[in-house]
Amino acid sequence: MTLDPLLIQVLACPEDKGPLLYFADEQVLFNPRLHRTYEVRDGIPVLLIDEATTVDAAEDARLTAKAAAGGAVTTSAAAGA
Image (cartoon, rainbow, N blue to C red; front, side, top):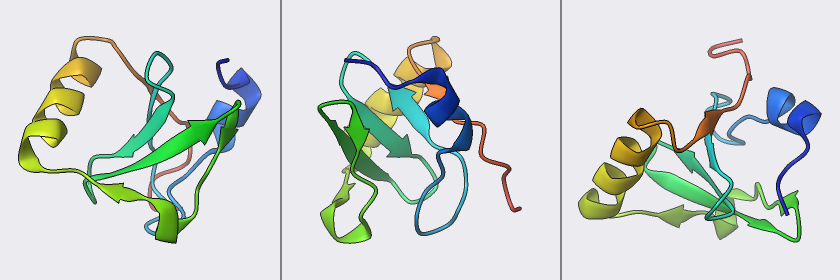
């Protein structure tokens, strides 16, 4: 189940309020600035800081490369707003 496009437009990291990268095939939202992922369960983003997973350098590099290759959608949260 993928996220609704309207929801993707408003999602932001709960900690730094910046945009996230959404990987529909992995059902995960990724914050490359904080090196954290947020799970999407049954089409619902779990944006709780306490439930975020900090990724190691290898996973960070994998997700960043996948996003650069077009494998992710950037949420449209206004950075810094």
